[in-house]
Amino acid sequence: MRCVFVNVRCKPGRSYKVAEEIALRELHSELYSISGPFDLLLKLYIPEAEDVGKFINENLLDIDGIERTETTLTFKAF
Image 1: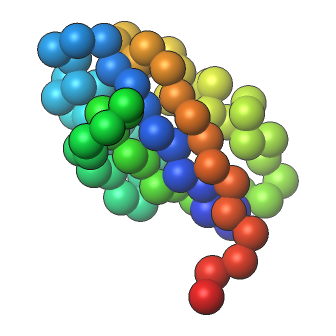
Image 2 (image 1 turned 180 degrees about the horizontal axis):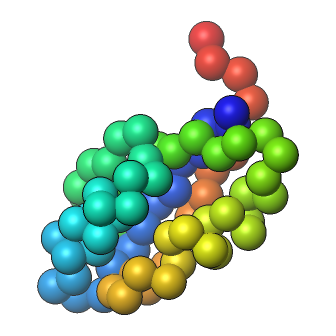
């Protein structure tokens, strides 16, 4: 499994609805509301055989209220 972090910027007033929809899909390991230019931080594990971009497009980006995302790939945990 490949660990990735996804920052999610939501349309104004939609962050709680987006978080609820993400939670219902059970995609994540952890999900936080955060401060700064993004509203949510999502930690998820993607199977090694899956294309990261395609996985995120098909499982996350169709949620109404998401304005933008930024994905950080991880390499090694210390």
